[in-house]
Image (cartoon, rainbow, N blue to C red):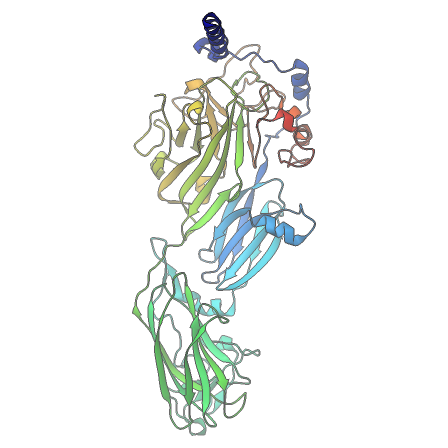
Length: 586
């Protein structure tokens, strides 16, 4: 029994050691065991010139909306289900952008999966929501809103500080004594609200009634003019003003009846519908009476409605409820909360996948499982919609090679000095030298090495956080997936990139190998037939098993490739008949 155990152990060690390539083995192309016929069939596919196996395209998002504090969410939308309600429910899991316009504009380039030709846009204005499904036309998403009447009247009350914090200007309440407006005759006038600075009305005809002091024996409480809440109907006059959460605002208003005792209320809140009654004003017609109070702006409330609303009037629905000399004073400043906007790739709750063959520039086995990384990118933007941070959340899902491969990312056109810090890298093999900020040394562009030995990272979720010294535009950052690359077997000079992407410059461009079996003699990371060594997949991808060619795992991959991406753009999805699950890794 003891001899048998020793024999078994020795046999196991011999077999196990034969499965681990030594240093010499690792530098040579691996022996391909896939059927030569299968590879030949794959390489004989007619791949259109210029097709780079991309599963997405760049789409320009433009939103024009000058409404203060309006917030947008943009979702990828598809028509996979029979009902619009189901499609919308699914879209709400696919958030691409969330934020507020800056100076009335949102302008970004999104990397949008090729499976989508529409987006679902949600717009929040105070507590009012609106939704719209928008076609992506010519790779553009254009959405324009004409500012509401309250936005037009309050736009001058907002500004953005140098820190990106949205603040309120001074004197945010406009024309509280009704002196700024059209010239009045000796009696009264009912102009459209657009002619009365600051004020809006709930009246369906949009008319505001102004009186001149002394008309019918009624003096103004202050100045020459005052207003009547009941112009042609029971209504309210209001202003929507910029406020900061936590601010205390002292308010006062003078009220007077007309034909007898009139009643009106003061309502304050985030929205016309939900503003609460702060006081009830019941006043006779012999003198002006002052009503006052203090309002504290709740957390999360960026702007506030101050509403003066008629309840009843002795003279009927078109007669009564004079107001004048409305004064608002901020007695305690609130907190100026910095606005944070966000972009997601491929969307908030979905991961993209990058899959490599590591035998470049030689043919591999086309199973695209040598290194498979599932990832999601969150880009954090400030109030000006400029980038302050990028979080790259990833997990190494598959390693189909004995090589100690590394992985990194280049931000083309971004200087290393533009980066304040990089955290999350796992460098264990001593082949990477970084600057103090976490970017790689000797690089003109910012290069971040995530890890240098995939075997020590497989199955471990991690986040690379890239913080910028100063906010940069999304155009300067570039578009996801940026320029990811594999470092082959700890050879820092040997990188594998997506098709037609450049190598980094550490310390010089990778030299092109020569020989009869070299399949990429021009360094564009494509074979003469057009096949890549790396693919970025805008969604969830399961790696084929070892030596299973990708067309034997994904039934419509060939259709997609030969069509130049127009047929079966969703070839990688887990739909009925799309995958041969028996040929995929668990």
